[in-house]
Length: 288
Image (cartoon, rainbow, N blue to C red; front, top):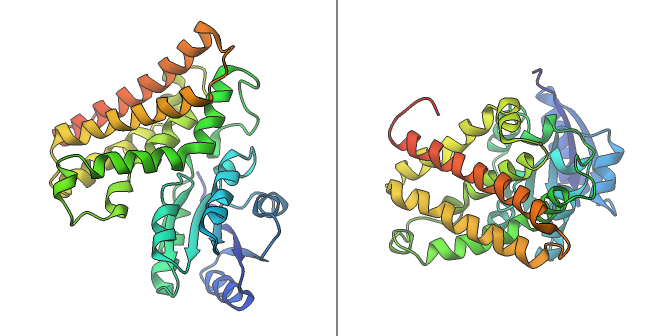
């Protein structure tokens, strides 16, 4: 798949926006600049679907993060990966809970590191890049579950983080930062989100062989952090429980047994497949 190099920069400071634009243009990227647009989703739609969005997140924090939620739930913008820029370390960390955010920088930051991140994340397309833009099951239970997951993913991730922070071995590891802990949960939620766009488990993994490669990244990170395999797998128990808690609170009462079963099967089989990938990566096996 050819690497596309179209970028949209959304920045509230015009001079900084021009600096980022000029820097990336010097690297060969095609870069558009929007200064403080009224609606970021409309801006993305108006620039013919950029491949990467550089997004300034000004305070207040919750309003800024809701922009990420709006991007994830828009039928056009949902597969645009985002690099966020902010003046607050806490906002940079929180932004990483959103699975459409691939990197986050706190101003002022090193431009070389910023360019490296842009280069890296234009080499690998979003898992959503090949998913047809219209919702595949419009109006049915799978579509409803996918929308809930897209809209509420960062809330699910933060409840998950709170649980593992208070559970051993993580509770005994003050050296692990929020960024260290949060590194993988958004990826798993994105896998589940994309899975809900397909009619079968087999079709999803056939169309997205890279999904399991990304799943193995969790095992490599946790092994490097000296977290045992049992604890690494337990993370998925927590994540699955938080995911179902969110769905249970928002699921339609008229979903019916068949619809609920279809959602349960799609989500649980995907999480189980990720767990198997994690176990095998811990054991050093190459294939899954």
